[in-house]
Amino acid sequence: MFRCALNVLFLSILIGCISPTPTLEPHLQVTVPENWTALPKPSRNTTYNTIDKVTKSLTVNTEKSWLADFEDQTLLTLVEEALGQNFDLKSALARVEAAQARAKQEGAKRLPDITTEASASRRRYGSSTSRSGGSSTSLSSYKSSGTTSNDFDISANISWEIDLWGRLRNTTKAAEAEAEAEQADYQAARLALSANVARGWFDAIDSDQQLRLAEKTVTSFENTLNIVRQQYKLGIGSALDVHLTRENLANAHSQREARAHNRDVTVRSLETLLGRYPAGTLHIEQNLPKLRRTIPVGLPSDLLNRRPDIIAANARLQAMKHRFAVARTNRLPNVTLTARGGVASEELRNLLDWDSLAWSLIGNLSQPLWRGGQLSADVELAEANRRQAWTDYTTVALHAFREVESTLTAEALLVNQEAAIRVAVEEITAATQLALEQYHQGLSDIVTLLSTQRRKYNAKSSLLTITKQRLHSRIDLHLALGGGF
Image (tube, rainbow, N blue to C red; front, side):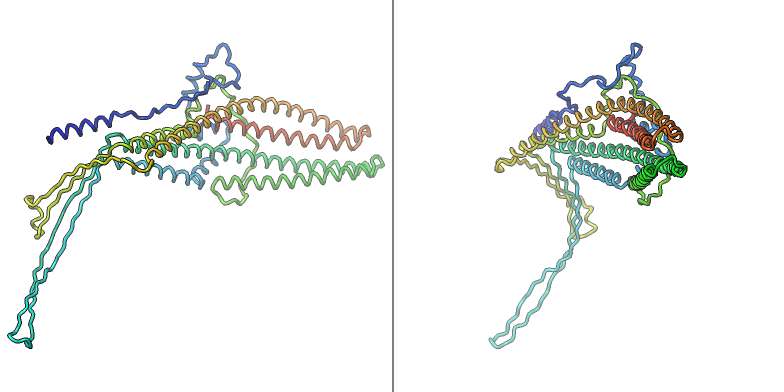
């Protein structure tokens, strides 16, 4: 009978091991193209398969591969500093470690729980006898005597829940999936921090260049004011020309102060990202970098599989699937084996005498019968959480597709916009020089001269802005793709 019971138990364990587990590959109910619609079509000599092979052979780490596109060594240094010093990133890393510890806790529940106990005690047992005299008036005398004993005990307890239905296994897998999601969130935080540092660095360079442009504009307007004063003294100009030129110069001074304030705010914000004290002392003096390469033709859409937020959403979906399986198995019987053994003796030296060994083996089977609908509600809650995780995963994926398509479109539009603004800068520069010459000759009025000078400043400022926007757009693209090309 004992062997029969063991065979039944063994078969039950095997059944629990082969119980179905949740699938691990979610499929979107949305038609996804092999390549991005916003990209230019490949030439006749280029095939999608070739592009795929080339792309997949590239390094796809999250921080440094895509930063090389900007050819800025200072940026690489700043990103490295931020990744080591940023406190938000350290907090995200702590959450990863906590999730991994929880996964270890759940995994440990699948193993037997073994404890040992050792005790030593000393007791005294008392006894009392009385002796009475012959008369009632005689005194009674008492004599007390007692015995003392020692007790030594060593025992071991083993308790093991047999995971017949996979409840503990699914709980462990759910915790592991949640830890994987936290790890992906941490990678997303690293990627986002790198992108924010890059944006902050380019913003700082742009604000510094805008300030230098404003200072040059002030100098240029001061020279114009000197010219207008000389013309006025010679009787060529009028007092109105002087007032208008002074007003132009005053606006230039105001613009310079605004640029200085913007530079200060931008630099301090970047220093905070780096984990530094925001002292506003970061050295900048350099120009905006140029992009090293263009976007490859036929960029495959499956690059999104490495996006940390998609990986995290997928992991949370798997965790909810395992939680749902746990909720269903909670309604099934629970089998626990408990074993206890030990030795006890009145003498310490006799603890190694195995003749005094005592042991017990207990099997416990518990089946929930009625809990007021709690178990059914747990299943319904787990199913609702699973559906929510599925919709969250789909939403994250669609947002990712939208971000890539939008940034690819923006890339092409910004290139054309930058080219147009460069032409505008060239034309207004020539127009400003011509307006100054004509004003000297009395062929043009002061309004035309001042207007062309302001438009020249605005065009150069716009060129700096559009150059920075192109860099930002490339950062957004790498962030949307989850790394480099």
